[in-house]
Image (tube, rainbow, N blue to C red; front, top):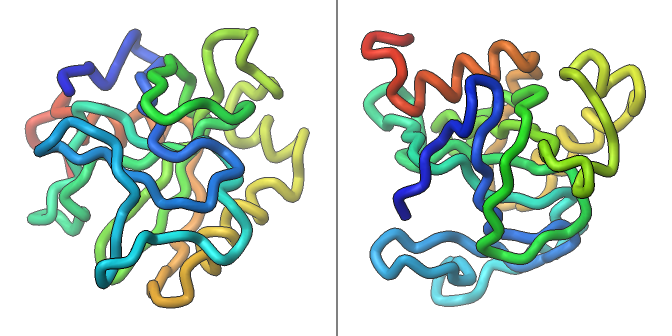
Length: 180
């Protein structure tokens, strides 16, 4: 998949792996260029907890470097809108980032809102604005990630705003050579 991370200076492409409301853990397989249900110990990974609270996927052309504590994958994204099919590519505004560590590796989740007004179910200029309009939503997302898979050890490090989310995306997309 050769899709750029950024569409403009403040919008990114989001590739949806898992539609909102889905329980199956679907991942993009880089080798086969297909979307497949992830397996653990030979069994499909199906969330027994609540389904995914938003469209889940990744920002293409980003890389979370294991040499710097990352998980070796593109950065994950939660796109807040109605359920979209697997494989959808949506231009979106990053409004924040949930900083977390999964099994000892950084596994941040960028929170985005579609640029297309027809796809928007809410409007927010950034994390603070989103939190004012929907005061429990960030807590719900945090709790979902902490508890959706009891076999994983998740440590929540907190939330960062839209400026920090954009800076992290630019770093992971290779915009800065020596970014920390």
